Length: 271
Image 1 (tube, helix red, strand yellow):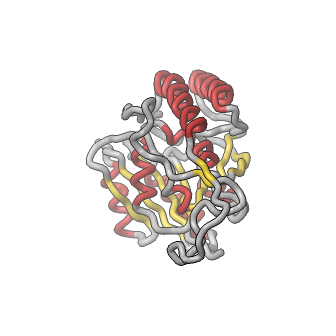
Image 2 (cartoon, rainbow, N blue to C red; image 1 turned 60 degrees about the vertical axis):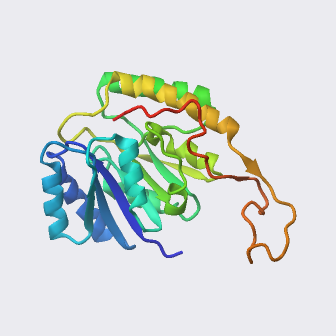
């Protein structure tokens, strides 16, 4: 299949990282063999991030941006990027350079066989507290969801766009993209990648939203897993819309999520 690729990069107050990041993404753009563009999503930054992004986009046609009217959080920024991308594949990369754009090549090797290819960080280059809270959150998530996802929040992913546009995005659920893909009946591949120290600036996450937020969101996701609607059609009339109906394949087909019918999920802000 012929692919096109858009790399989504959410940005919130990352002025020190923008130009070094562009230098690294340019290395990827020079070598990638499929049409590729970069889409910055400015999530209400109040530093010079947007100014730098605009300068980059003016000088290079491979770079684009959208800017949100305020800071909504990572889940909303990713949703805005997905909604405004038209390529067949979408990538997710953080702006802090803790993962390398060049490692997208490792993920691209497998995307034809899977709906989502996600990295997992082999050796975390974070503070002791950050590593400890993330490890505990991942441990509790695996207990609650009974999954085999090693590093659900890894900021290096490639997903097929048709799947991405069906994902139900609530605040905080950017952490659970692999789980959401499997709920929709999709397939996931995990690839080990190197991890690096943050280039500059400070993390936007703290103890509360790194530990308690993910646990609450995992409980909500568990509710989704148990209540997702699936069905299988055995027979259908030949003149039904002139095509084979959805759900008439050889396995159960999870339906689209009915947004707004989840009594657990709220609209918490979680940067």
